[in-house]
Length: 364
View 1: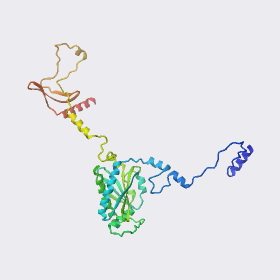
View 2: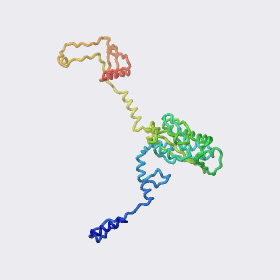
View 3: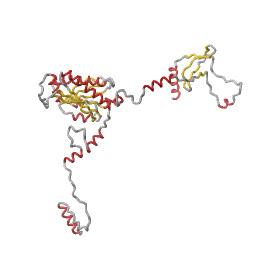
């Protein structure tokens, strides 16, 4: 039996390995060596590269795990409401601009690295760099070639039904850039109106670029929100994308996290007003302190009836007013009718501020 196994191994070294017969192995069962080999489609599906360009947002397999680790998208509910409002505003504004039947639709909102987004922009395209004044940061508006040629045809009276010729390698003319700039300015004005119920933001167009390398407004590793819109003008149209880095939205992040307009995140204005009213009605005990001395405990325990304690205060010395351990202000002792009164010499707020400063100097 050993000779048969050696012969089988020697033959397998020259070609395919031949398993010894089960009868020669003394009746022992060996596992089957044959395994099914995956084809190329199954390998692509496993790795997540089988989806097309339009399905890049629904990646599966290993590729989805890698991309999920790269970008963590924080859902901002109020931002989706703002963009829905922007769609309605742009529909009316672009109809007034083009004097044509314009339909604007909101495709999707996603998150990606800024560098990856610049690399994925299909050229030729026009990239508008705008500045959010109150947020002190920038954003991008990317207009694809089909929408550029459609806007030019509509504004210059082109024929309907004519196919847009995509000329590779030709830079955009001054007229084309000027017409697209008008459309971008309309979009930015509608964005200001859309954000107005949440906060006032002025979006100003900085410049127009055709090379993505000159439109860098953030580091390549920074995360950004990409919003895609579709504009249809009868049988013409195209897409434009709006990019807002997370750094731009950071000052208004709390407002964008709201589920609805005016949410206070647990803050109750009724309870605040009730608490303020009750505080104004609260009674406090105010002490008038003429003077204070520090004596040893033995001397205090040895006090007898009839003994006199000597203070440094005189009839003209100021009287300190305090609430508990907190000093409030000071005044002068006097008499009103049959009652002893104190006339306040300083405002309470100023006295409390000076006392706090003295305590801080003493602690330092």
